[in-house]
Amino acid sequence: MGSTLRIMSLKQLMVNGIQMGAVTYGKPQHPPLVLLHGFTGSALAWHSLFGPLSAYNVYLIALDMLGHGQSDAPADLERYNIEHAQEDILAALYQLGVQKGQAILLGYSMGGRIALYSAFSGFFRALILESTSPGLADAHTRAQRVASDRVLADRIEREGVPAFVEYWEQQPLFEGLQRLPDAEHEELHKQRLDNRAIGLANSLRGVGTGAQPSLYERLPSLDIPTLLLTGEHDPKFCAIAREMQHQLPHATWDVVAGAGHTIHLEQPERFVALVGQFCAQMLS
Image (cartoon, rainbow, N blue to C red; front, side, top):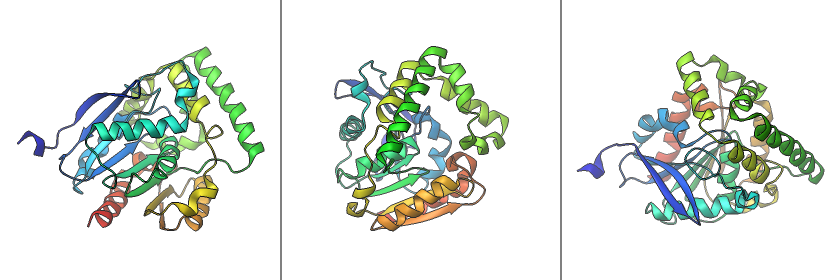
C-alpha cells in the first residue's frame, strides 16, 4: 500500500563516484517527470509544485545538480562539465528504476541547458524547457561569458555563499521574485543558502552558459516533442525560445503572462497547468 501513496522521499544516490541528492514524490507506478533546477537551486526548490503536478498522474523525480543541494561538490573542475552531468542524470534514473523512453525531462534555466543536452541521449520521451537556451552560438561571445563566469566564481569563493546570494537575488533577471509573498521569498532565500561556495563556483566554471557547447546546430535533430516556456517579462529568453521553436522539429512555445524568468514561482498555477497538460498529451 505504501507504494501507492503520494509521499515525498529524500534519497542519496551513488552515481559515477559521486553522491547525488534526489527527491521523489507521487506514485512510483506512474510515468516519471524528471525536474532539474537552476543555478543556486536544488531539488527541493520544486517542492511547492509536487502536489499539483502529481495530480496529472506523473511520478516526480527532482535531482540535485553537482555542487548544489545534497549532491557532492568536488574540487575537480572537469567533473562539472555537461557531459558528466548527463551521465549522472541517466545513472541516477537507472538506479531509480526508470528505463529508456519512459520519462519526460523538465529543466529550468541552468537545468534547462543540461536537460536540452541530455535530451540528445535518446533516453527521454519528451522535453520541457523553462527559460533556457541552447548556449551561445558565437565563439567570441562564449569566450567573454566564460571570462565573466570565472570572475563571478572567484567572487563566490572569496566572499562566501551568503554575500553572493544577496548579490544574485538583486539581478534584474529575478525582479519578478520580489513580488512573491514574504514567506515564499524567505524560503527561497534559505534554500539558496543551503549550498557550498566551491560547488556554486565550480558549477559556474564547469557548466556555465559559456562553458557548455553550443547546441544550436543540433536542434533540428532533436526528434522528440518539446515544450518551451518563457515569461512575458523576460524578453531575452522569449527571443531565444522563438528561435529554438523554428529549429526544433516538434516544439510548441507558450509565453506566460505576468511572469519573468522564474515562471514556476511567479505564476505557479499557470505553469502547472501547461506542464500537466503537456504531460497528459504525451502519456495518453
